[in-house]
Length: 113
Length: 112
Image (cartoon, rainbow over the protein chains, first blue to last red):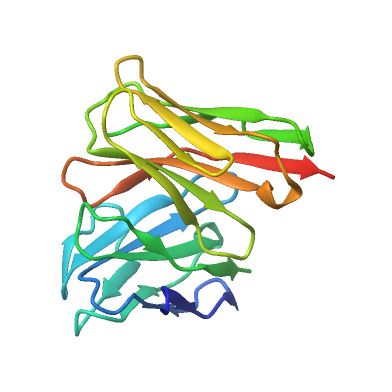
């Protein structure tokens, strides 16, 4: 069966631009998560969706970051006024429900020049 | 806030060597401990989920143990192969079940 997919796989942008990263979770998974891995570190939690609602967005670093999941399936992570420090691999994961195993996508590598 | 440390940061071994790495945590106030294997340009792949003190899990040549009382988990690889080269991540799932806190990972390189 299809796993979690993320597009694009790579994104290069200039400082100050707006970017959108997309995640297609496994069909039927109600929980969706975004994580960010900066160079030399482990992934860090950004946000968790249960269905359409952001149940925990405590990991979003500031108000330039926003994520949506309008129909409870596909999610988009939006970053406004990108900064060089936003360069990282952005990982998406989904699970049947919270507490269940999280299945990860291959990530989007974002480079801000 | 959960804290997770992994050691070593990186490890070079020869094919056929057995190896192990450590995941340590000061608090056992979490729901489960997860081990993931992450190859470059691929998705992190779940290896084990461990919840109970004394848990031991095995999958082929890879096994893991959990000691919540002393605050560590070990991952063992017996007879390393070049295809075992990857970053191994340890993560704690919080009691709310909605957030993984990851260690920095151990990068394993197995030379043929």
